[in-house]
Length: 161
Image 1: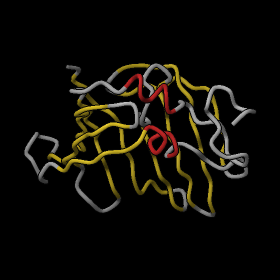
Image 2: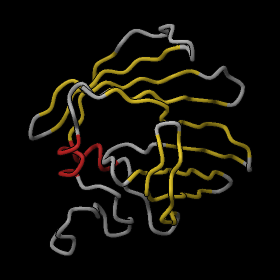
Image 3: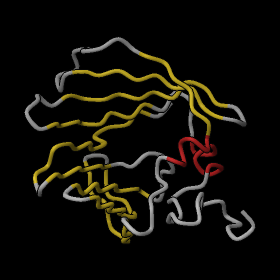
Image 4: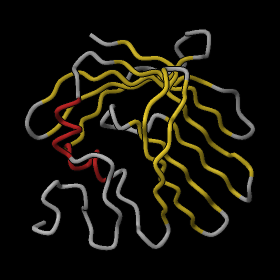
């Protein structure tokens, strides 16, 4: 878009995303593995693992699986591929339903300067914390329905190649 030279705004009625597709591409490191603790209402917590496999100019390939908090595999590894623009689009949120605040994000992986995107739809509030030094997925996510947490994801550990 001519009005967005940095490539952060994907739609005129959406906020700018925290990272452009190019920034996500440049930060995508093959071999990087991130573990996130997942909790869902009424279910046992588990760990979601994502490992980057390869990248080219258009996108990246990765594999995902789940483990118990003790490290026992719960699912088979699955491979997927996404374009950089598809990954950026996950963070594109409507201006009329979303607020953005600068925050300091503190998670088991460390403390980061970040941005918190809070999206409200009816009685559902989804909050996404992005670490600005880590272009890509949010490092923390929380979904509330009627004020109760029904889902959360927190990055707890990473292993760099």
